[in-house]
Length: 560
Image (cartoon, rainbow, N blue to C red; front, side, top):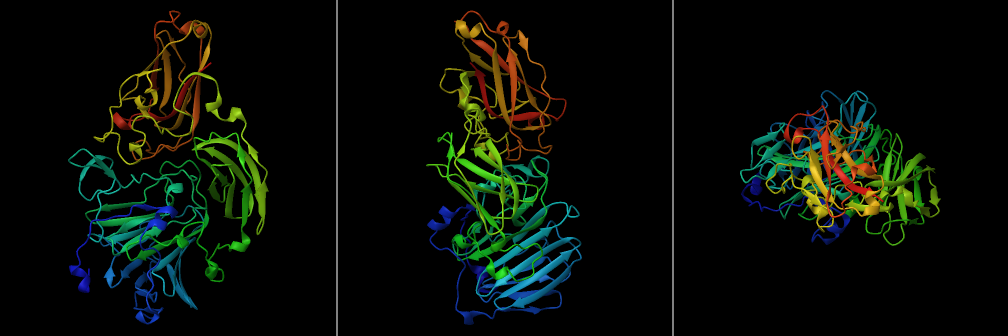
């Protein structure tokens, strides 16, 4: 810290995430406004950097040679930088062409590095930096922006922090504290649909990244990625559009943004900066490559959705190779509206929680609204509607409800807070779902047993057993044994991401249902006895323990 700020005590407070509801409840919101005389809006050139004064309390610098953000000073305190590193795309682009222009109340810095173009914009009187990134091809390996924050300015011991531990338990990015709790930058808890902003606050200063609408990202509304971290060296806030970690889609190219670096007086950032509400008509004439104004976009609206299971939320997604969007269906009738859509033809998918239960094609035109009549989800599209002798968990495309499921979005499976991964399940006990582990690994808890009874009529017939999964690691998939007399064939592995998932906070892969035709001869004829289903995980891949072949479970049922 500098000046009088150096003796100001730091209060141990943090805001991890934000939604519109959270922002509305914050005591102080929005960019901090000060009289115009407090600073002069404009820019200077110090020889190495363009120095931008926003006319509020924020002054930032951008390197003229690399396009890195080299300084981020708020109220005279420097926030940018740890470990000698700047804030930047990727880990820094290197030599780039950097230019600056001022148009009225807006300053735009343009960075060109090969085929990639990046932009910083400042508005007179705002404590915000607006950023856009246009990635045209794979010459840059991933698409992220990281704000690197000096150590000691914000303190936290949240799941995505490893400030207080250096004990590595997996790769170089998963750590264990002395009390057995785990920490990793991957443990954000959140899907993209769950947050609008991330950052920290001391109570008197808040530093945030407000995410973009992710129209050029990959993975849809349920994708999970690292959002922030802290270590002894400082902190990082991320806007990640394509990370290559547990990705289910090919990456998309083109202009993404704006996303916003926002300072506040301690409260949440203004909801006017959130995706879906942010308007940037002031940027329409700036000449940003790939920029499409609101007038060049369209809207998709649906009057309702029938055939829903109202116990679960429904999300409507739009996707093609160029862009993706989503919106929530109203719980009362399924009405939805998705705005700001680039023209084109999209696959529209209705999700029950995270399980796709309906799809169709829609075409969007600039300035127009594509209105859809009420969508009727066929009963057969939802596996939860099938008549079952027994069912463990509802079909939602998630492991939610199973043992340890909630913890696994922000902790390693070895975490001391996790319940034992082993243990058997008895149908009819009333605790089938909570006793069944959300993940099964070849080297940890393969051979899980499920006990159940059948009536004479049920035991006299063949039945279909279904096991739904949400992702797999190292081609892990279930093979089943019934009463030690009938063993299923080893199923082929479905297409799943090849990177880590189960150990770094994500169960999101490609939902898949394994089906097994169990003959009547496999069942016990004595109705007083329990039939025993054994679920093994098979694969020739993976290593040991929690990095052995494994899979995440959605639901299991035996059809009538």
